[in-house]
Length: 208
Image 1: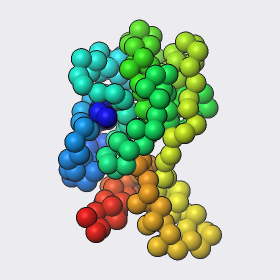
Image 2 (image 1 turned 30 degrees about the horizontal axis):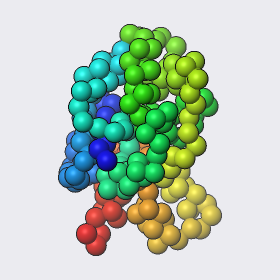
Image 3 (image 1 turned 180 degrees about the vertical axis):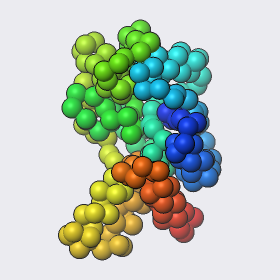
Image 4 (image 1 turned 120 degrees about the vertical axis):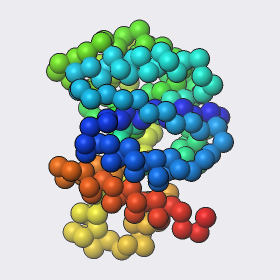
């Protein structure tokens, strides 16, 4: 099983700090069969075209699935690969359903789905962001989001832990069991995203 992780990144502050945080946390871990590539975009409207060209550049590489994610997500490469082993090799568009499209925080694409997107993604879109446009293209071709994806939402769970009184131990166990953790916060400088990256990585690395 070979996984190509494609990370939508931005060189403008504060997103550059997220790239650095990803590189020193989850992407510092080497796992056989899992390769990470970052693709860069500084303007929302042109994201569909940038993603399409990234897929074009990736098609001749060795991979069974692409996992496309953004700069505020943490992945456990070992667990990501294990989860991918359970997915179908064709017609696989697997992520958290955002309403007819897989959330850009992280979704799997099989090779046939990549071909559909290579043919259908426009150069730019002034009304929707790239993950929504990808969902439109795949829906028009007769494909829908698989409901099998899993995701731990760090800051949502932190709020719920305080509100419902969940134990730290239970939350740490849930983080260890997650292949994908969404670290996105509402902070303008995204500093809490970095805090989440480091907290998740510390939990993941304990005992290794």
